[in-house]
Length: 434
Ligand code: LLP
Image (cartoon, rainbow, N blue to C red; front, side, top):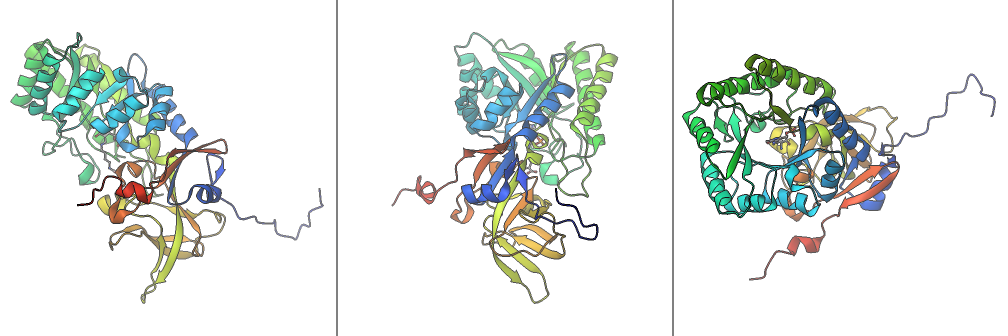
C-alpha cells in the first residue's frame, strides 16, 4: 500500500446510488426510464418483521395488494407466508394467475359487482369482506346458487367512527365514510343476525380499516377500542363473539426527515396488546388479522427518471423536468405527498442548489417535488425519487398517452424485470378505428 501523505485530502469518488446491490445508473441504462426499482430484500424483510411481530397464536398478516401487485409480488407474498388482500376482480385475477392460494385471500371492495362476487365464490376465496347490505344480499344469492359444499366465509366491514390522523382522502373509518357499516347501527345489527342464521355463509367477524399513512398511534388504539365496543354489543345482543377481527392496514412510512415513524414491531405490539386487553376483559379469544400495504412495499421502491429540460423562471425557481411524473406517481397531485430525491451518481455532493422536480404531463400541477436541495443538476442526469414503492405503479395511468414504466426487482446485484415497460402499440391495443 502507498504511504499516505498526512496533508493530502482523502480522494473522493463520486458515490453512486445502489438498489438491491445494483447500480441505479446502470439499471436506468439497461431498462430505460422512468423505472420503478424494488429492493427485494427490503420487501422480504418487512414481510418477515410483520410475521415475527404479529402472526402468533393463529393471528394473520395479509398484504394489501392495492399498494403494489403483480405476479412477482404475489409470489413473494406467498413465499413469505402472508395472506393477501385483493380489492377487485383484476387483483383477484392477478393473484390466481400467480398461483396464490385462493383460501389465503381476503376479498375487499365497497362495490363488488355480482360477477366479482361469483368469481370469488367460484375460486374458493378464503374470506369475502362484505361492505354493505346491498353487497351482502348479492353475495347471499351467489353463495346459495353456488354448488360449493362449503359456506362462504365473510367478515363485515365496519366504520368504527374514528377520524384517523391523515389526509382526508385516505381516511376510511369515520361514520361519514363511503366504506363499511356503522358500528352501533341497526343495519349492522340485522346483518349480523341474518348472517348468523344463513347456511350459505359463515360470519367470521368484523373488519375495520381507518385509513392510510397514519403515524399517530392514538388513531389505531381508538379504532381497536371502538371495534371492541362493537364486539361487546353482539356479545350482549346475540351471545356471539367473532372468531376473527381484522384490524386493517394503515401504518405510515417516513417520506421525508420531518415524518414521524412507528416501527412495524411497535405497531404490531400496540395492536396486539390493545386487543388482548379487551379480549381478557370480555373473556373470549379471537384471531386477529392485520393488513399492511404501504409499510411493506413503500420504502422498498425508488423511481428513476432521466432529467431533460431545465428551466429557470424570472423569479429564480429552477425546474428540472423529468421523463415521468403524475402519470406514474399521482400521489403528489392527489394528496400533496412529499418525497425526497437524489442525483443517482453524485450522492456524495452537497445539495447546494434548490430544484423543483417537474413531470412531463400537460398540467401545472404535475410537480413531483417542490424546492428540493440537490447538487448541480444537468440534463441527462438520473434522478432517483425515494420511497415510491406504494401506490405509484398501482395508481399509474396513461394520461397524455404516456406508457407506464417498467418495474424491476433487484437483489444481490441482480435485477429482474417484473413488469415490462408499456409500448406505444400497447397504447392503441384496445382502440378500434371507427
Ligand atoms: N386494508 C384495506 C381495506 C385498505 O383499504 C387499505 C388501503 C389497506 C388495507 C392498506 O393500507 P396501507 O397499509 O397501505 O396504508 N392511494 C393512497 C392510499 C390508499 C389506501 C387505500 N386502502 C395513497 O397513495 O396514499
